[in-house]
Length: 392
Image 1: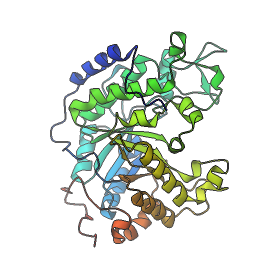
Image 2: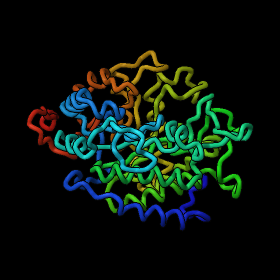
Image 3: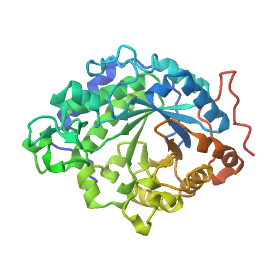
Image 4: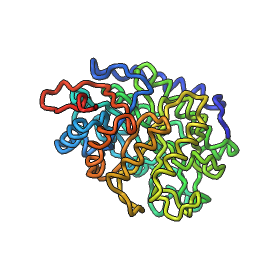
């Protein structure tokens, strides 16, 4: 395990350049108030399109009334379009972004009692690769853009320009008043023909571990975002808890090193995403208690000296499980709670939360078995029915 907090070569120059970006964006007044990093979060996920729609506001209002307290929404997903007007040269591709007014959307979330988490898919960026192929991973065989399973999708994590763009985007989102920036796809690609992939760093420093570039990026982001007061969270593969060298070498996600440069680590512990009789389970998707428990135990043990909060992504979709439903959600949440997590986030790519909606009343009635029930923002919008007084 690398675990190094010292970065050589490029760190001093590139970090100084990034820090100068903090002056480009004015803080939205009154949009965010200070919250502790160990705040218990109960969140659902929105695409940028859903976040910018009236239907999204209806779903968010229902979630808050049921006892939820946060929404994670895309400001850039892996397909690459930026969902708000970021006023950046590399993000000026949409005349009409999904979220027309980011500060207004964030203010609406806060007035409706919801903590705002802006998700950025960092290095997987299909749109940027298409518009700026010079920023992409290159193909050794063709000299052109490297393809992941036939598709151009990945920017080069070792290119300073790619790192700077994503930090600029995070600064723009922070200036919109969000409470937390969440970095996803903060890794190297692992699918496709890896032998054909060529990265910029290999020309001059081929022996440098991939983890150095990922940790260096997060360190720079932390330094740039610190003046804003926004929290930083990162998404990591759930399997990283098993600390297999093959996973570290491929992804560059050194859990220990990364934990020092963020407030919250968000392992994607979806039971259905464990393959090949993992841990002796033929159908991992039908063993949520085992995988959430063991995953949380392992992440807690690995990061125990770093101070990072472990807040997992939980499964809110039916793929590769025959038992998904409200009870499945309750098992995951209760198991996360028993392992002292920092709350949970529910992922459904289609933003359909029927099972969690059905599970929430029982979880609210179940008291501390499921969650403590705190709310970082009080509801000030008069039309919303609140859940503060519903807990026994």
